[in-house]
Image (cartoon, rainbow, N blue to C red; front, side):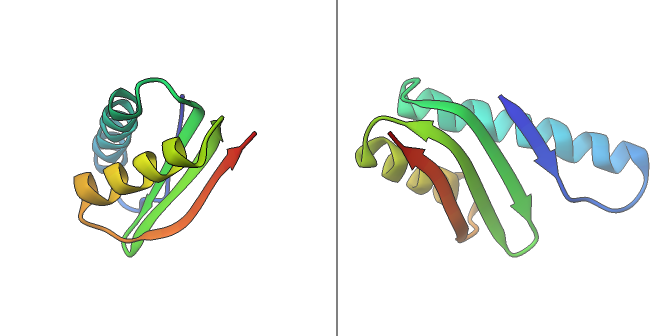
Length: 83
């Protein structure tokens, strides 16, 4: 699992956001039951971008809805690749 973060400010603020990002990724992974591999979540002030790989469109959809529910933000891009 990889976390990316676009945050400005003090290092302790960035570190706090990184912990929140990791927690969000872990929660999404728990809800999709491991059906999304290499999940990456990028949270911006105006929305969320998802990346990763999965076998079904259903898993991709669950990940998207979970991220929206947990953050209260819209999905800017769901780049989870279905293979």
